[in-house]
Image (cartoon, rainbow, N blue to C red; front, side, top):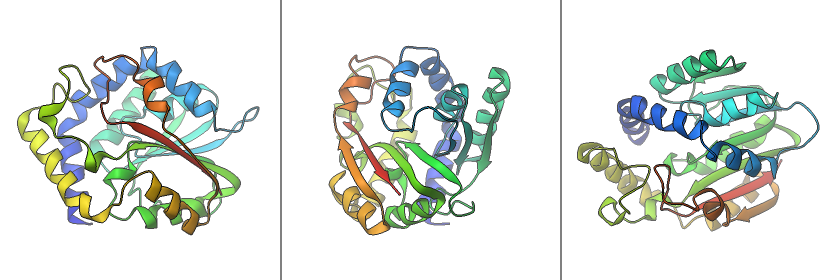
Length: 238
């Protein structure tokens, strides 16, 4: 495993409890409906889909989509996150499957999924180009990738953040780890989402669309879920 991935898994292992609590509150808030509407902009309507949620964390997207009747599999590199996602699924009675798996090397048969969704994950990958190529192979012809992310490696450092935001309760030591990971990844990446468009084209995707308005629709208020780094949606068809 890459050193960055090991550090990333270690970082998120330390954040499981607090992160899960935040996501549970988000799931019970109006944000759940906002995220559902954003996903519905891109997912085929009128039928049950096979969906892969990559970098599922504690399962926010997976649980939301399972609630809509889809067959959902969530994968994450951090075992603690997957264990918590399973616990939450059991508590909600949701039929979603969760597996520990590398986002860059998902071990599924080609053409297994109608859709792949991911939230704030791709910025953490040392080999985004490789991930996009593998994800393309996992999608059925006409399947869609819906990626919500931000150019986190170029965001302002923590001291410039507003007083209310998603990292408010993260201590100084963990924020130091977060900044070190960003510094390690920054030389590997080019400005996004422009770079993503190039990589997706090379991976074989078509009908690539970028939406930078999602950030204001989701984070219209500065609350405990607020993300000050502009989030974009990039959607593409296999």
